[in-house]
Length: 617
Image (cartoon, rainbow, N blue to C red; front, side):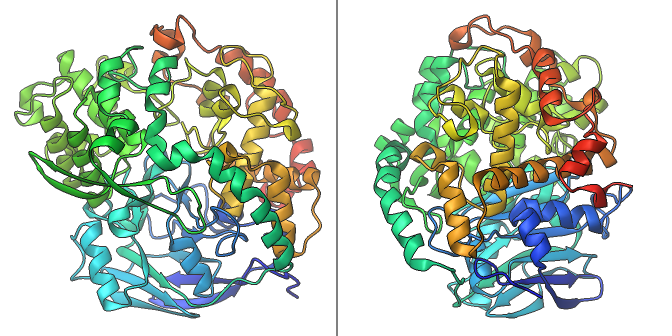
């Protein structure tokens, strides 16, 4: 019997694309209480509904779109959704996360999530509205970019729909293809190749529109809590509202956190200044946009003419400026805007795309690639025209782009020689635009992240920069170069971020003043649960460990909890000085704290304590 009082619609859609059937399944209270929602719920479902030998691009690999109990309510910055599957890029756990309106619309349409299995005989899209769902033909949309797809589907359904779709990159199986939503506002479920899985199923898009609501157990008290925090959150987030995530670019360059020339250099002051969020705001910014229930509005709307065409829509985020700008030594802001817009249209993860282009540039510099390999492209550092042309080749899997579409690790396997020296990743996922030589905890967080190198799985660098977490035992900002307390801090933050990813609340809210107590309070007020902070964090620990167990089933162990040699052994100077993170020292301590054995496997005692015995043989 379902006793959930609020926050859940208690319904999951199961779509068998091979058979063309749609069924409604009940979301049990045990699953909701045990794994909350979002990627936590996704971990339980993916583990149960796939096997170790399920290939990522096979019809049998499930693709899950999931919301959380706070999605669609009035909770601040809660309009998010997760995509969960097995990654074709890394072969292990994959989750991608996006804001915008899609998550809330899915809840208002009457469902907590959608589980896709199988492969449609012909291209299709799913339309969900107010308790109903139907598969519609998409042959006429297949091949279109994400902006056109959004326009065509909303014209067929309703202008108020939110559309999550793939572009040509997902259709052609680029292993780091993204799922894009919100049209020109371009919110991306970007990492780990979830778009390629969607394309392998002949699923072009999911369109959702709802006019319903999400019940809240204690709405008056929830409103009171939100009103009390909102002024502080808005005040603390003023710079992010004004400049977006790109506003932190110059600060990152100053402390050695910004990626430059494929992670080789520590200083790029003039180049970084030319592509900063401040310059964007002064020159090409036309407005900003908001995810659902967000009072900050970090989304950038820009308009700029470039030699390659006009850009009108989403401006680049910090990560994109780092990876398509600094990493490739491109200091032309309009060029980076066009490259970003092209990735959004084609459905590419800008992080892995920038890493692939920079990798190719370094191979070109060292003679591992010649103009014969590149089809005449001059891949010298800073050549914006070559970057833009190579992005198109990657999405269409043409020429050198077909090689790079596999990701840097597989491309290095084929190129051979010193090529692997130029890959910067963990578990096959290219590293985002934050350097572990600037923040020691990032080395540990990247190495142990369940989806591969990811700063958002732990968000640990925030506690080495400007944020304190007294509730987790860290009342002061930690020394960013020290290894002290980093094992405990990383584990605690990974557990907390697992809860953010399951509730579906934006992690940037911690900069605005959102604490653990707020999350627990909001969850209890929405659902009418009575969780204490200890129990709440325990669920986060369970979720993180379940994702680890999923990877262990696929062969992941200590041998994989490593970073590329460049960031562990090559000093780069600048704001990071001579610092190199001591991963080995932190890793052993981290395993002890986690209750994992020396090979990085959760012990039987840990599995029993976390009530995960049903997931292991």
